[in-house]
Length: 102
Image (cartoon, rainbow, N blue to C red; front, side, top):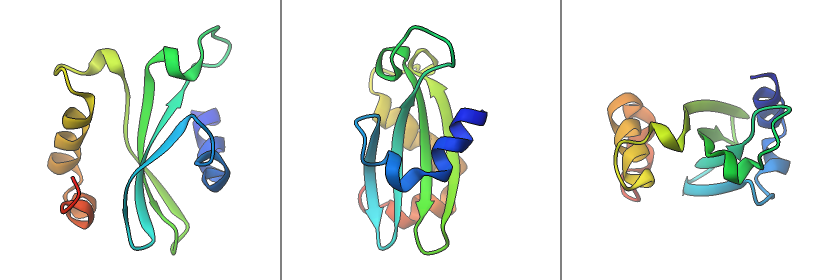
């Protein structure tokens, strides 16, 4: 968690890497997906299957972790549909900002 927190404090730099993907944007807010690895493991962030979905409000300079999961947690064949459903159910206020795109 310490490494994840460090990463999120420098989110503006991290979003420029291949480990991060800005998925939905609305005004000065966005949802992004990040790949990460467990410290001291020999896996790359991509092959580790560990993911974080975050909400970023650039005006308020806030970052919220919405989901933290590994791809083995997914019970459907489509990862994106799976986490979007979880956002809709558990983060309605954030989801509503992007529902025209999701």
